[in-house]
Each structure stands twice: as C-alpha cells, then as structure tokens.
Image 1 (cartoon, rainbow, N blue to C red):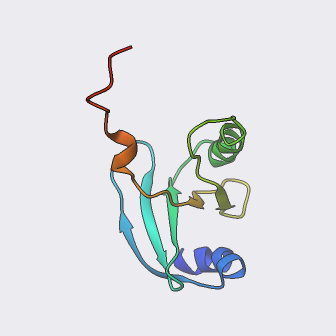
Image 2: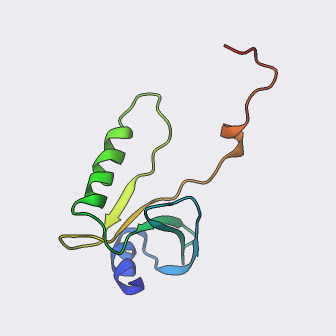
Length: 110
C-alpha cells in the first residue's frame, strides 16, 4: 500500500512517505499521520471494507463544509485510492490547537 500512496503523493508534494504513526479517536476507520520526506504531514483514513462511495461521500462533505463562511478549518481532501471502491483517503493534516479548546474563564456565561 505504501507504494500506492507514494504514487499519489509524489506528483503533488515531490516527496514520499518517510514514516507514519497511528492516531486515536476513530471508531469506523483506522487513522494515521504520514510524515513525508519533505517534512509535510498528511492525514490518512483507511477502511479495509468500506461501503460503496464511503470515502467519496466524505470528500463531497468536506468540500461543502469548507464553503461555510466563518466556519471552522476543514481539512482539504488530497487524494482517494484509485478504483471503484477506495479503501483510503488522504487529506490535509490539521495540527491540534489547545488554544481553540480553552474556554475563556473570565468571560461571562451567555
């Protein structure tokens, strides 16, 4: 699979996968961050037996969400595994930001 991923990423980033590490939080898909040889990071969702159009529907949803004015940062889809039933989706990796999660204690409650 790594060769297949590299074939998708190399024309876009001029780099290949150097390493990867799993992430937590997914209940339906396996997720991991791919570290590229140029220092970039890519987020990958993988499912060995997804329903038909599963990842294609996610790509469409991400694109719609990204059109929201003043909406949250939405990861950009980069590539789907070629074929009629892709088993992985590559997308922009968004760093966690504790700044976005911290409540302002001094602010009055609405």
